[in-house]
Image (tube, rainbow, N blue to C red; front, side):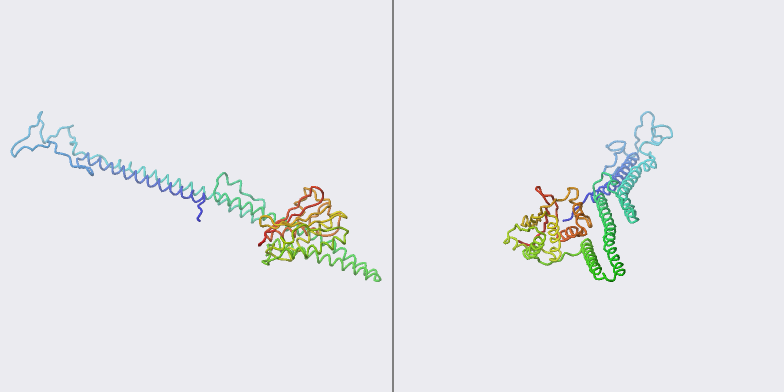
Length: 403
């Protein structure tokens, strides 16, 4: 259905008003001119348009017969009509027409100027925000990322105002993307510097102490594996932020949960902790999600490993799942120290590590960032919150294909 916005009606109103003004001016001009012509004809003794001719001045009765003369009172003679000396009789006068005709064109000239005024107002009203938009685009292209124009649009409410706010949102997203790229480049450089420095140190020591070369080779191999893992995570994050396709595979969530729980049981047992599940196997067996199995597996595994790492010894990590409003809700609960409220949103930023996580040297701060991007690529979301008792709750929501 065609939707007519405010801008359409503004154009329509101004154009209609300018045309109406011009038509009114022309109509008034023609009416005045026609009235002047009728008046001139009536003064000249000619019948006006639509009126019968005037009767003879001598009356409607029969005139005098041939050879007779009408009586002229007071010595009046037919060759000397009554009136002022040298003045033509009333029926023979011709009023001046030049002044009347010029006055008749005054409404037309006024209507012309009025229509021009309305057209100029419309052009100014419409071109001002467009010109401001053009200037803003040039400023943004020139590197002025702080350019915003929403407030300069005034109180008008139409499509141009919405376009101005869309520009502001685009500028905000562009600014955020550039800042994220700069921060990512800085963080990557910082994270790569440490393993590279340790690798160079091990090479130098191996050269100085050939008898311990085997020991230093193990160190170098470990640092090379760490760098390879870091580069892999950076590439994954980069693809997800660039809008990589999540895939169109049909994922059976019972198979995914079976693999995740098997790995989680093993890792929790190795760390002296427990892992348990709280969901209906029959319900989950009917749930399918459209996407990529590897991405979803990696995203949820990142959260599970974080929970197992940070939960206290002799406590358990719980995996809950259920269907609500045609969505799959997955909760991973630990019994650790939780996260400060001010950092609940920051933990999803690349390379961000909370104060509590900095106590551990494991990881680069990319796991939760990758998880959030994976959830978004599958049309879902992830929310972090502190549990009332103790620990952290990570709620992941995914749209399901059918259940």
